[in-house]
Image (cartoon, rainbow, N blue to C red; front, side, top):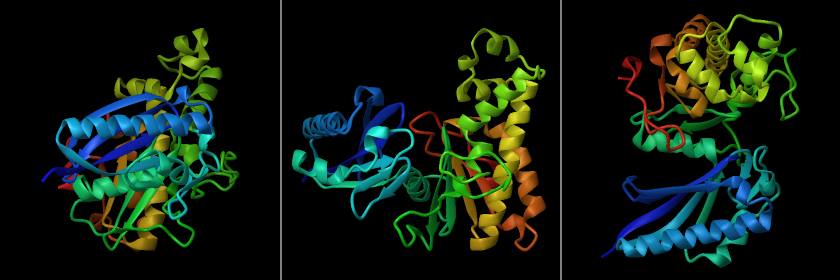
Length: 319
């Protein structure tokens, strides 16, 4: 009898990452392609169908039985309809009935879900959320995503979407977010908005090693640039991640007060500055948890890697 396997697809604004995965969660192979090579819906659907066919061939060659494909997409996703309502970073997906369009082109069931929800599910199954029936997963990248696990199951809410901690208000008079609200956590803790804040500070001659780079080419300041600078103790980058940490602590405290969670897991590319923003996050969280014992909740870095990139050591707080 052949071993069952599935295909996991992370469809992001920059890259589409695919993996052939065993039923035990072991990644057997992985590959990727640029999202920009799929500029419209027809091209995107055709390209995904071709990649799924490639995965099916790889499974057959390895003696595996491919049983399905799961696709994670950022934005408002309606899994029951198999439809992407709105994806801020992949315009070709807006109002796309992705499952319906892919189904005739492949030989297995296709499932669609919000990418942060899948992050939370993965960490709950095999990562830093193991053993915690009530947890929140947070992804820090271009934006801020969230996924809730309640009573051991993904919580989807009344309309098929929930857990959007990135769009909780942390500053009512703050910047207007891409979602239309003002002062979302995303405007304080995401890569996009933190880069914008840093550029504003550099334009006012803030002390930073990044000043020369900014003067030569402002577009060279990216989220990855800030992560590296912060880890090398650049003063402005450190200030930026202090701001990230404190805003996360504020939002997490509100969610914990509401739901009584025991674990919060943070991942994503921008979260690679964990060692810089974790201390202010923890300080703010403890300061704001007035009706919930701070020792009853732990905030940890993801253990399964950030979008297929690396992995984190287990934090002492997560043991």
